[in-house]
Length: 290
Image (cartoon, rainbow, N blue to C red; front, side):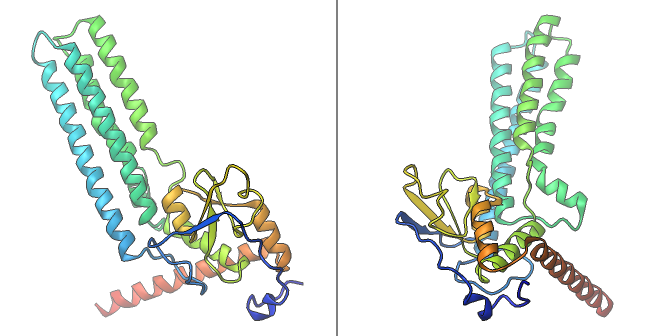
């Protein structure tokens, strides 16, 4: 049977973790430090992460404002016959570049300071603002192009087609297909801690797509690996957008600690529900007092 406690009783049953002979670089700063080994509550970004996220969001908004400026310039050209097709296409391309840059900055900021899933509308807007910005940056221009009296049918087909393709590219670039959230960070961190001796400590590589519990995992100790990074679950997401745990490390940790995956997942879910209920009760109490 799996022990109910994951503390000292469990440590005596563990096998020593595999160590790597590669260079292991510890990531500093970010949402939390690796030495924080206590079981975590709801994820909270550090002030440093919040500051970086705020800066990235300001640059993203600035980029989108400039994209709107490029769109405005393109629309202005449509009312200046004969329409300069070259400059019109240039402005569409500039609009596209600025929209994509803004979207990438915004998505990176969300990895540093993720939104909560409690309000589905606000979560969607913050997670997919890059998509919304792409639509705003191109849809009005597309409408003006196809209704312009200063373009003939062929010209409308050329620049209209370019604008539609630009909208599609910007829209796809703006979508976050796996948006981070406070709940996701909390769940992943709790799970890692429970199977990793209460340590929020993982490893990854520059080109890796999963994080590992052991620096000596055979999946990252290959001839192609020159350096291994060490940090928290949140840092792996912030820096490399890594969301998944290595299956080999997971199986090894579960086996060594005599743990059952489904039970651990149920424990994590129960803890998150309890913490969410506690936060709701606190909010209600504060509202009543006010």
